[in-house]
Image (cartoon, rainbow, N blue to C red):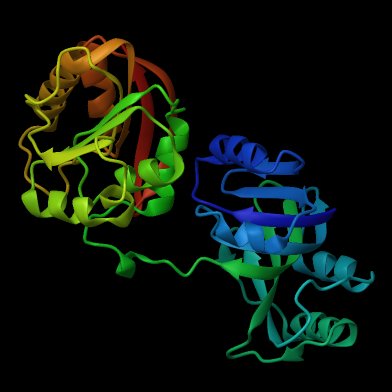
Length: 333
């Protein structure tokens, strides 16, 4: 089985491990780190390109573990062995990466790595605009690898509306929620529809209520293909105030899954008062054993408000969203 390494957003390693095992039952995970997974996979490598949350995926040429790892030792280990290149046409350049930052090395070391690739592949050297890259990467956990970059996510914030949640984060949130086919779900701060889109596209549920106080955002969400093409009656999408939710019956929702405003980019008044009213609204519509999944960069305020409202934190993880430290929480009554 070939070995691969893929990177992803910090904090979601347990979610990635569970999701990959469900997708590919025969996959063998070799190393799992924050933001990085090393695994053996015997399927078509093009299947890995379809995974929404992978940033970069590498075909592994060499891995090393231990203290004091450095680029000369990594290059030496690679160049002293024979390697097969998964992508063996086009051009390449060498990149050196130290703890997720591109690093400069002595030109003689870089040339040694380049000469090795030239001698052992059909790739041509192009340092400016290559079709392929070979990375020598050292991480702080005492793990290093040399890999051929086979896929890179090109999606950026330029593809999103201002404030729109990235699709891979929305997918992670849905996985974290452990959705089952009998769930009646509410997303009351839908924004531009990132979470509802992933729910409709990848998950099974009984009913989905989607709402936002901004009419324009609701219309954009309604127009998304996954929402508009859903079977009649499966998704209720409308303008509604999350602090009221008058259209939702008492104790009718088994799961609220949402990314409420953080108060950094919009005026919501006092964040503690906002969270208190929000949780009171959720408490009314939640069924017995109902659960909340909430993403927030106002972690201390959310945790305090949840405790005051009688909600318990069942599990949580910490990540970065638009450069801000955020927490993802599973709360229960």
